Image (cartoon, rainbow, N blue to C red; front, side, top):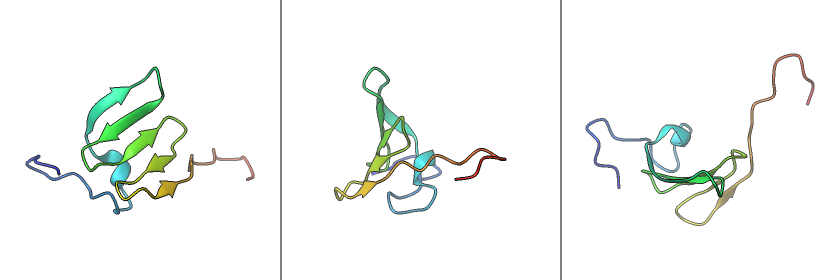
Length: 65
């Protein structure tokens, strides 16, 4: 999907969240990335194959999970 000079990470790469945003709906809390991933404000994701990735916010230093 990506046509950038330096291609965005694929939807299955560990760093898929850094792909370029191609559509954004801040009022609804989501963005479509160049690699086909839908990223939500809570850090959850929907991959192009329909798989769901649960929210995965980092835990701040000094806070036990």
